[in-house]
Image 1 (tube, rainbow, N blue to C red):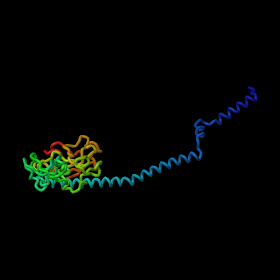
Image 2 (cartoon, rainbow, N blue to C red):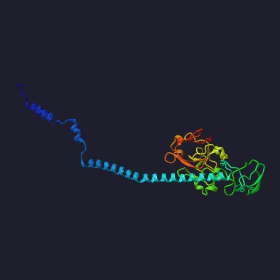
Image 3 (cartoon, one colour):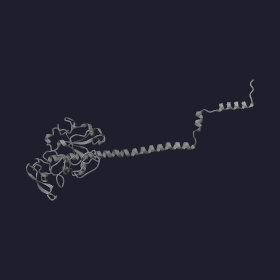
Image 4 (cartoon, rainbow, N blue to C red):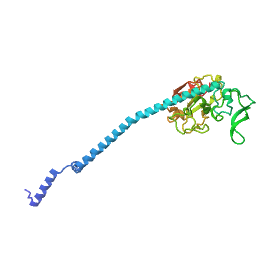
Length: 290
């Protein structure tokens, strides 16, 4: 029988006790983690902060979404009203000018022609508002040998018109109808400057006789424009939509709920999606005359 010294016995007893009471490493790690009341308080506060932020965001959405929706609806209704007024003004202009559509760029003519649009005859002279030799604005006799029968009359106050848009002012009675509330600024009362109108005119109709438009129900007269880069003076006109407009939701054809308002050569107007507009012959709604 092996003899065990007293010191060796004590060492063996201590080793056996340590092996029986040794805890796994995972238990020791968990025990070493901070589990005091301070850490629990911090964890509770972070969850509470997240809930408060979420609730605040939800409240903002609930209140702001109806306001944004109402604003968009008001802008659409205003733009529709403006398109109707411009369409009626154009029809009245056509009747006053021998059944001809406005020129997109107008020549100087006399106020007398407002009442008698056929008074301008080739080779004749007429009285127009024009600066005299001293630079003062007055009525002087000038040669209008290039004027055509039915040349549009003067509608702008104080002189000749610059383009189709200011030629309709006498029939609209309000320059605000040239602006869509959803279009970008600036807003301008000077017809020679950008910002005079947010609506374009179909250049293919310029000075054209009414009887030469075979499909007025489908031929575009006016439409929503001004993407912030156009020359939107009183001569603002297009013969087709820019290539980017039908595919870019930030462009005018998407301005009101994914579509825009357009007036037609017969005087009616409607809301259309970008894909319904074309410059090709035979299209549903087109810039083309055939």
